[in-house]
Image (cartoon, rainbow, N blue to C red; front, side, top):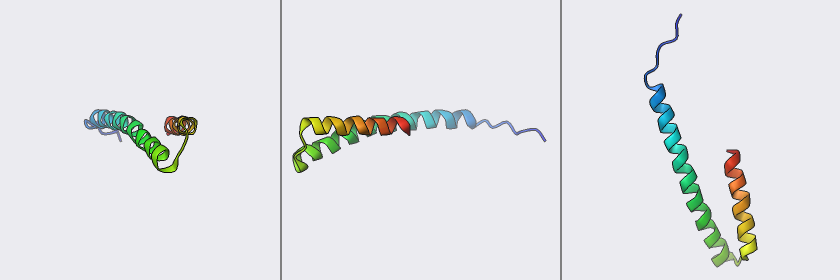
Length: 63
């Protein structure tokens, strides 16, 4: 049996790429919000905040 040609495959790939880009962009915004909360509500120092950002960026790269 031959595989059926899937015309939607290309569209799904494009959609997945767009979703990934949105996730990357929004995750940066989420990190900024987290840093603001850590600084204002929990009294984190700038060094602690930059460490948090570094760790979060590493986690995002792994996903």
